Length: 214
Image (cartoon, one colour):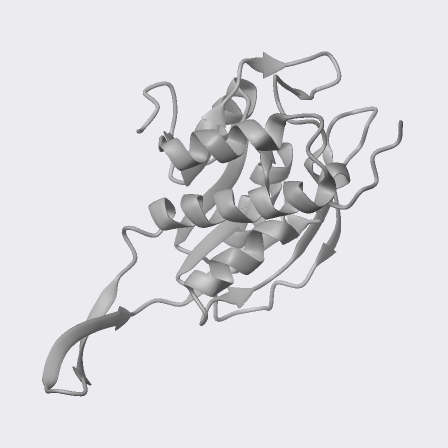
């Protein structure tokens, strides 16, 4: 369902609702958390790739020749380190020919602004469709930085896949990248004073990689 307040498509499905509830649960352990992230990423990717261009192609079955289709665009997956890494593998399973390009961004805890520390986007020859992967769209700063990097690379079709989003981040993307397509499992209530999504799911990177400090 497309959210009327924004450019966001919220993927509403019983499986999404079920897995997201387990993801939010504070008692969910890292191994299960990673598995849930991968399941939800695959469901998001299914929805986000509905408009990919295909080309007709004949195929020989064991019985006869029949018409079929193959993808006709270069797809680039851009997980934002480190939390976005868990979202990449299930999407590669769906699109084995996709290219993977990493961006390293972290949030300055004092300013809540993104700081880029790693980028390996190659000069020239941009992909046709860029899928930015980041489990959480909070302030929108990291997403805007990633989309801007893809835009500078020359990617014509920009998409962001996030598990959950805050209305503040959605609004920031609406202003900065109104042409981008955004797919989420849920738009939550708000950001708190520390710029964390509420009700949220905590820090996705820490929960995935078992680095939560008590």
